[in-house]
Amino acid sequence: MKDKTLTVILAGGVGRRLHPLTADRAKPAVPFGGNYRIIDFTLTNCLHSGLRRVLVLTQYKSQSLQKHLHDAWGIFNPEISEYIMPVPPQMRTGESWYSGTADAIRQNLYMLERSKASYVLILSGDHIYRMDYAAMLLSHRDQGAELTIACMPVPLANASAFGIMSVDDTQRIGEFHEKPKNPRPLPDDPHHALASMGVYIFNMDLLFRELETAHPSDVASGLDFGKDIIPRLIGKQRLYAYLFGGESGRVSQDRYWRDVGTIDAYYLANMDLLAPVPPLNLYQPEWPIRTYHKQNPPARMVSGAFGYDGQLVNSLLSNGTVVSGGVVRHSILFSQVQVDEQAVVEDSILFDGVHVGAGAHLRRCIVDKNVRIPPGERIGCDPAADASRFVISESGITVVPKNYRFLNDPQQGGG
Image 1 (cartoon, rainbow, N blue to C red):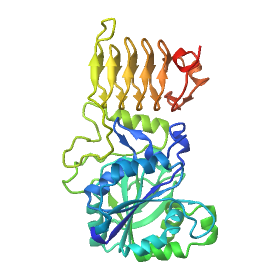
Image 2: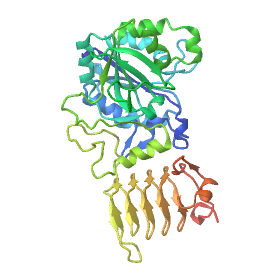
Image 3: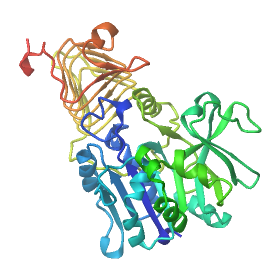
């Protein structure tokens, strides 16, 4: 079945709720976990599932994403019909950009037709999880399904943010409601509902028929799978649910899936990696997460100029990082970060090239690329002062944008 499957990754979302991390990049290109970009998790799933014909539909501020795809994922051989191909909007069907998840694919039906595939696997490029799609494809075939939707139980209190479905004993979907105000709980669990993960397998003929005959009013308002396509298939076609975590032993069954669409969700998913036993297993040798690695020296801890020893407590450090007499607690440091003497970094995420000056204190922060924190600066310690300069999330995470310049730093032309 893998040879008959075309994979389409939707990677064009604006990512407004992740601003300012998405001020200059698409959401799938946002760095994650000290080493990766968010899209690396979906692409790694494709790689290990044996799916080697992949279209990545890009749109919003896609330069960073396209560069990453070129640098990290130019690994397949097009001469044997293997590829990971970015596809920007081309306005082949009109004068509009992609407007909704289904419209993005509708505008590229010609590429689906050229693929000669029998099945289309549709994925989102902005979720954090590990999954063997090959097992889901086998379930789709064995059930005789025309559409299979990956799903998982979610707390009822959060269910209104998802597409919620009900199934019978054979896992056939009987109802589907996109982001319902009063979601229906599972029959045997009043505290959870069965939610769509946004992972779909369509028979090609069904997908073609539904998208080719989409009503112009639906297209104009934004054509989505959850809002428009799936509800009208209920009771007419063979729709089945696939419970996430039912994969083979090729991937450890951590059953971890996160939509990191907000600053708080993104921050918590990163902090999950620092748990004594992380809920997401990045260390399974049979399922390594692929990404692009710059040529950096090893990470290093060294005493500062005045003899203070660096301290590292329950943190992740990437290559090229130097902690020189500073303290790093429960934090994630990307490559080429420098933490100077008596600086304290705690409960924070520092992107590539951040320099924390001597005596500075960062607490519950996300600092984007190439920011120099002046000596003695305090961020995350005074919410009122931070709010006058930076974005602060609902839970109090302070976000310092890329290339931010502090007025009180003489080395940056301030003061």
